Every structure is written in C-alpha cells, then in structure tokens.
Length: 273
Picture (tube, rainbow, N blue to C red):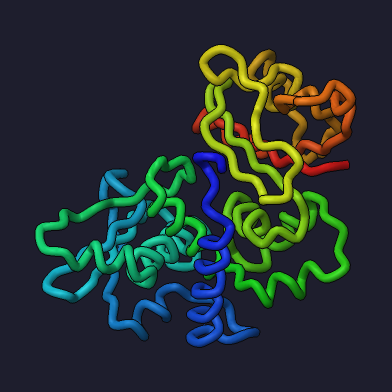
C-alpha cells in the first residue's frame, strides 16, 4: 500500500461515520455545515488570524473542546477552505482514537495545516473525514448516477457542495466509482499522490530527487512554463508510470492540471481514456 493512501477498510469506516453525522445533523437537501455539527456536539469555535501557525487546531481543556480556525481577509465559515478545515478538526474529535488521544493528560495542542501531504496517518484520516462529511456518500452517488467522468463533473460538484477541487477529488477517489489518481508536484518534484484502489498503476516514474516526469503535462509546466488552462490533455502510461510490461507503454490516459502558482505547485488529475 502506498504511504499516501489509507487502508480501504479504514476509508469505508470513515466514510460511513461522516455520512451518519452529515445525515443526522444536516439532512438532505440542507448543505452540511460543520459549525452546526460542532454546536450540536457542544464544541465551541472561534475564527482569528493566527499568523499562519496553523489552519485549524482543536484544544481539550478538562474535557471541553474548542476549535480554532485561521481566518484572514474575506474568509468566513462558508468559504471552501474554512469549511474543509472545520471538517478536518471535527474529524479529530469524532474519530474515537483521535479523541481518546486528545483526552490523555499532558497532550499538547496540535495545529493542522491542510495541504494533504502529511506523513501522519491521523492527519490523512482527518482530511478524508472532512471530504466525506462535506460530500456525503448517498448524495454524491445520486449526482454521479449514470454520469461519465470528466473534469467538468469535478468542477460541478465542487461548486454544488462549496468545497475545493482537491477536496472533491479526494472524495471521489475514496468513493471509488471511477479509477482516479491525483498527483501533486511542487517545484518540479513529486510531493504527494492519492489514487483509488482500482487505479491500474501506483508508482510514478520519478527521476533523481523525485523529479516529476518531463513528458507529463505537469512536467512541461516545470520544464518550460507550458500551461493547459481549462484543458484536459491525452497522455500515455509511459509518460507517467513505472511499467512492468512494455506493452502498456501506449495505454491512453487523460491528464487535467490544476495550477497553484503561488505555491509553485501543480495537481494533476489522471484517469483512463
């Protein structure tokens, strides 16, 4: 199993738990509001400018929990970033083993930065919980029924559920309704990846120092600045993956890039053509 992916059974457990909280406290057709769930659970929260020390933080003081959310400018409880962060911190409370750790005496406060690249499994679990909470399984399955996958569908779901594209993709990958891979490259190097359990490849053909493949669309961006804005491009298995059979070289895939230039970052979404 990849260091980036969770166990399939654990993914299912987290999805089911998140769906229960979404359906119990924010039943369809209401949008899922993390602040409402927090209030129902007796968790207080506050927004403030914490100078980038964290995106979110959950604190336990003698059994009473409080969530701090980093907010600047026009951020509010309805912005996609804060909604995901709030869901992430709720995950630390709702997932039993996370909450039990927080209840131990002497455990220091721990801030979370929601970049999806954490090497800490509990952080990846909280990320998944947030995505599953904000895009509950039954609701999103209705949206996907008999729909052919393309990036326009990802954009549509992102807007409908008021979450980021990356959160939407994380949810779709865990749902497993279509084989998908999401690859994040930063400054030309592989940062992290997520893939559905039925995706045909798991290993990226990185060069020295985890260099992203130059033949990929993301690789072209880091090589010479080429951008495929709002476009899905056709690539081949040999452009991205470690292959165990040369007959797979020309197996066709689609790549759609999300450019995050302020972070020197590209997220490539890959699916089979």
